[in-house]
Length: 448
Image (cartoon, rainbow, N blue to C red):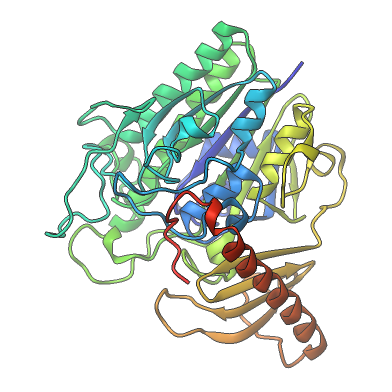
């Protein structure tokens, strides 16, 4: 019997912001249960430190450049994004008879050709730009700018709808449950993509969640409340799977799109001060950075029928592996698709080693790679717009996951070898981007 699939994605959530990942000031019991009943990864990665390219890689199984999206996409209604020619996991599973649905944040284009229905989704609910007010559902990013008109951004299957005053995290869950029920009524296997926009700014949460954390400082209190709402929502979805009798054969996956935000607009009070409500745990860096804090993510896989419970593994995996892993689990033909990710079924179900040798990242003029325990960052930045921390930074993640010590002079041969590999990969990325520019769906927000 074909398994069902669910992707849970959070937005700007730090590596250390789950209790199963080490958070001690708030609890996430439903996600903790998902981890304890399945497999939790300590070395799982996003494919970008910002959301649009990260989401593109997750859905297409490709590095962001090969998916046609290299940076954060614009939020106006003519903004293009993910090219129609690039297949997604929804496209691939739909061809295998799956019912496909999305509930949440898209951020892969608003114009015709870039929306969820153009990328394999039978039904979808949510918003299309980068961030919205959680209650009015108005595009949030440029609020207060006199030169930028504000737009409402809430849709179902391409039709604008209005749910003013209702908390968006709870709406995502309402529609996700609705789509699961629809799939079961149709007696079809389903793929459900549930990209929550929490804990991305604006920092909004219902009072009932805020009241759970009376002793935390404001910034941390709202972060905990937003993630607690997500955690409750995941619990509701799992309860529905159990009620409908499909929990055992549902393969669920969880990660964050990138590291925690330090953007000043998180504060909501005009404070021009970096925000510090989210935590990357022991990791260095945050959103926009190619140090570990910007790209290493909580990662969980849960499939009661196939994945042994209670495993915590340090093998490397990445968002782009989800497409081939899900497709393999559905007995699909991987050879039909151009993929950079790897099938991890053997790793998660049978205890095999990670199929990754080298894995790479790019962001602006930053380039990074990981090979086994070694992590190299070129032009690494902790703060966007600031000068690089180091032109070349080499770390041994086995002994220094926080990248606190630069080993480039202590291991010159490894530094040279990895630098050449990273620069060669980056050159290939730039050449691919240039030679495939006619295939892209207009602008993708990237400026060289």
